[in-house]
Length: 376
Ligand SMILES: Cc1ncc(COP(=O)(O)O)c(C=O)c1O
Image 1: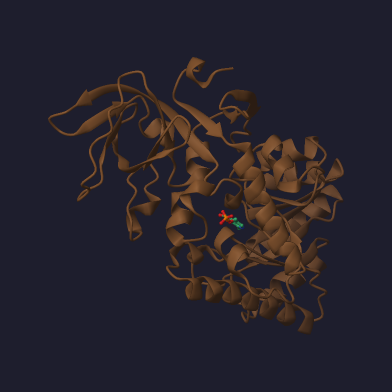
Image 2: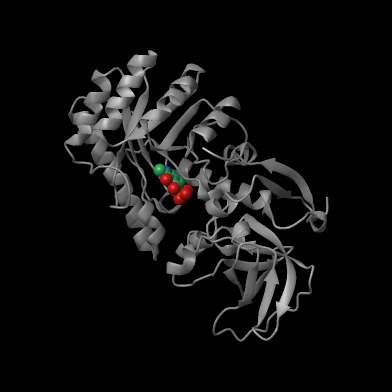
């Protein structure tokens, strides 16, 4: 199928770049001697997950039970649900475990541990849980030395559930600016997880799982001693935020939104497209970075980036392209009906606007359509 034949906006994935990104991560984590548990929340796609594993069904991380159910159905049996559990979701967790999926939940409060223990008793299924550790003051989790840590494990174990280990995510690594900061974030993440695991072991628990990960820390960890698995997901596509941190180049970004030029405002130096914030998402993740990329960088339909051309503004179904402030480059001459690619700030958010991927073929054509898992 010719790209030009598909109605815009649509989500385009370049499988060659995704495959290269996936190999890079697999090789790095293998070289560090630990396991990789890719996060499927970015791609939410069985087809993209196959690229992340180079075939086969390995361990995965999910961000919704819908992902767990879809991947479980497809034969993935080793799944961590890495968002804190709410008690009303435990019936679905138990149902998946009953079907042979080793689904593990995440928690950091006594109420959650009690609910998991009660659900285990009620269903007769021993539900495993990881305890979330806060390694950088970012979001959820408890400190590695918090006395609550062994107490949570005790509530789980005594109540008929299974304390399986600890999990941490260095979300603050997204704000690193230098290689030294990235290396330090990775080591901080590792050290917090290992300290928490030692704390649990000191209290008499096994702690077989010591789980860390984010794309920046996974790519900059120098040593992962004591860690049993790394979770990362964004890396399969990368995006402008990751390029702004410096963990990839813009040429590595495997995801874009194809839009069409629908008008010009020469008096304002604007090119208008049919891709507004519905098409790209409203994510402005590069706004806080040294180089603000607006709603995205602009490339031609073949992926060649126009220097300094930005999607600077967005309405629901209109994108406004203009030159970056201070640029001396001329506005490119792109007639109405020309297709353009927008490289996203945040791949997870942009992809979430779509129910499918269009897959780039070897000669710039479209070779397939891959569905995305939506909802919760
Ligand atoms: C708990 C958890 N683990 C792992 C990841 C993967 O990190 P990244 O998106 O940087 O690959 C995320 C992403 O938000 C996460 O929330």
